[in-house]
Image 1 (tube, rainbow, N blue to C red):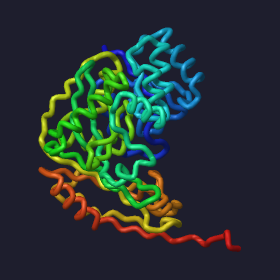
Image 2: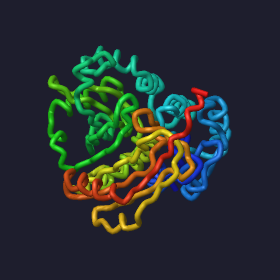
Image 3: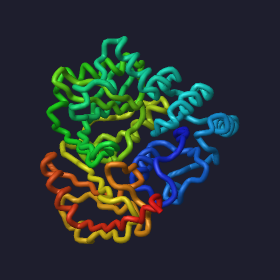
Length: 354
């Protein structure tokens, strides 16, 4: 039997989390999961073989709990999909003596200033906060699997950002035939970034901006991405990013051969006003669209919400996923499905003026 992977924290909490369930299910399909979390929600429990009640944000408490567990049972590796828990995961893997990200690499990836400095020393083009040209370029994310010295770019994620200043993602799209997959400058940039950081045996989510002078690196997350991107990659290419991450974390070599050549996209709905959500309805006819993968409400009436320019991820009202043969087909389907959602936000009185 495969040794369990220690998973630090979840993507969601409380009520059923539709973004976190998919990757958790994929991880559990390839490795037993020992979750470290104060109180896992009900939706997560069917996927777990064990649970340690500890807060990953309290690193020493978490390490003590896992080391006590490992004293009597073997564990195969440590995994997280959260930047917040990247450093504790790296340090814990080192203390357990299991495969994992070197702490120094995790520390650089978690610090944007240190990341830019290291990549600049290795002559990797980066996009800094004062880089006006890079700020104008469209973002693209590279979903890569690093198998020792081999860097496999399994997919590209095109993201449509929302309004400033928050600029939360409105849409992600993955197309197996994205033309950028054959761009040698992007591939060179990704490979040089991976080597500069010393990434090996990991799944990585690299965000770049495309400029007139070529791609520039914005950030590197050496763990599976969130926002249902693993679902889009699986629907478009057949590659299981979350499962691959679990296999790599326990020292194995996953099969990341593409088995599909399609496209998939997700759209997020944000409130137009700040206030209280007084109406939210999804017409069941949305499920009749042949391209519809899913359409899910993620808030409830009565919830306070913040308008898109200042919203965070918890303000999303709903999301819907479409699949098709091309990105254009997916975008058309997303527009059709959007017509099935109705929402009303009632502004609350400004008490500061009283």
